[in-house]
Image (cartoon, rainbow over all chains, first blue to last red; front, side, top):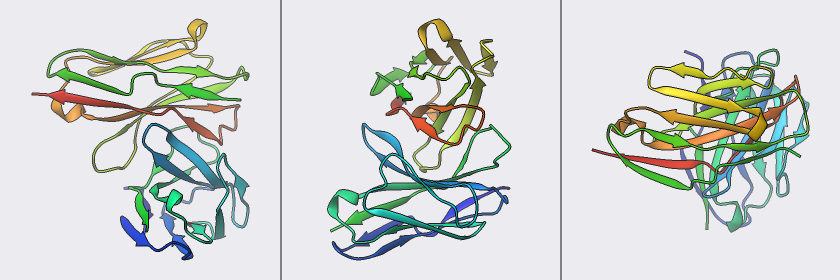
Length: 113
Length: 115
């Protein structure tokens, strides 16, 4: 069964901390994505990567960075966490040559206090 | 710019009722893809359907059906004879172009099915 695994289901961090959210996929997909989900706003794209060491900004990249050193792993980094980054974060992957649905992880609910 | 609107924030129905979730989209591309996803309480988004802009045929899968109308830029989703297990958040999404790399989501519709 193909999978996208997010390392933590729940995280609580303090304001100003550097936070790493990890995502691993086992489907050999080229494309990987980070979204945040907020009530009433749906899912908004933060960053995506179409290959190792490649990245592109999504709609709301401010305050975030990403790292893709290996094909299977895509990390989202909050350089200095703030309370307005409290949210659900969802990782997804997709085969570049497929237009079928993305495969999503179960999400990481991050609370910044 | 691409945009997806799901005007219904929350819908409550009684089991066995039919329910339609609305989705209206905006895009300047002639080639695009539309999706529906289900997010149950567990949190993981589950892919339901993909439709490309050149295929306006309606689709039925069991109790689920989708109505795609380019003339009104809508891609509505109907659940027939709803069940409690259908309770979830449903998202409509759009990706432009053949590459389809960027998926834009609507705000989602919370569906509550009561027994």
